[in-house]
View 1 (cartoon, rainbow, N blue to C red):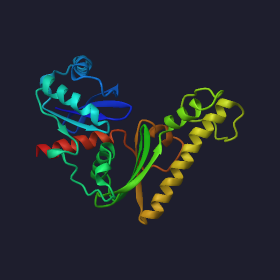
View 2 (view 1 turned 135 degrees about the vertical axis):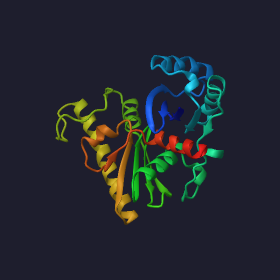
View 3 (view 1 turned 120 degrees about the horizontal axis):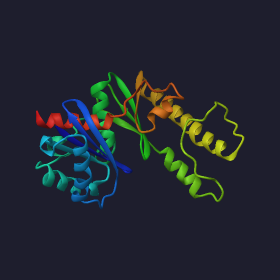
View 4 (view 1 turned 90 degrees about the vertical axis):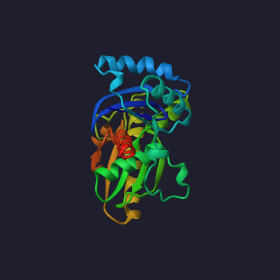
Length: 258
């Protein structure tokens, strides 16, 4: 089995692949100070609950946008699973794609992995929208080349900034508004309308501008935790693919093993 670790700015997601299928997944808050031993205490218990023995792990791959976390995950792989992990974008797990931007080395691992997986699964030109700590919009052409994109504050970051920099506005949960009115009758409704529908408007506007600039039909693939929430209120997405980044890790690992 393959153990894949997707290290984001907010969470680390571990996924266990049995062939092409995800057998289990676990999530923990990202903390670069967390040691390999601490990861092991947590992860091995969860594996035991699922009836998975550590000896079944034959390969480990790590994709990280938080470089400081890689060292301790390497220790986890070597000490507790007896394997040297692949690091996405390096060595045998090199991206293997054209990164057609001014600074190719600055492309985040998550965005490269999304590009690899999206091109493998969907035909033609693509726009990949990833709802994470930041929301990213990435253009992938029909050859699989990464052509650039957009970085916007994630919706939770936007809400944190709004609440943190005002004296009286309350913290609210992100959810789809109960009705379609954009004229709120109380403070919480007005905040939710501004954050949610404002985000939908930004997203739809940016995607349309990207499509216009690409100049060819482009499918829009959404991923990340809030993709399903927004999919309920907009028809801009052609597909919602929650495991795109993890699948990119699995594709890299399979390529490296071939």
